[in-house]
Length: 93
Image (cartoon, rainbow, N blue to C red; front, side, top):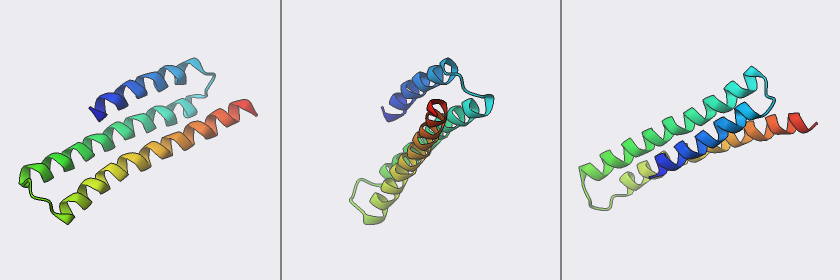
């Protein structure tokens, strides 16, 4: 479900990247960032599936692994947000 949401968000951001007067480098950075978020979401999903497949009992290390996977997605998304802010700020200045 989360992967589908990121795909929709990336499609919107890709349209925005091509609609705005960005340089090729700026466009590449934001498009690559979106793809990196999708990659991290795939890694997070893999971690969650493996942890759930091993067992349904509550284990601290298993929960920690899931939390780290989610954090990786969040940190990557924040990095892409920072790139967008820098690029849009450059357009406004």
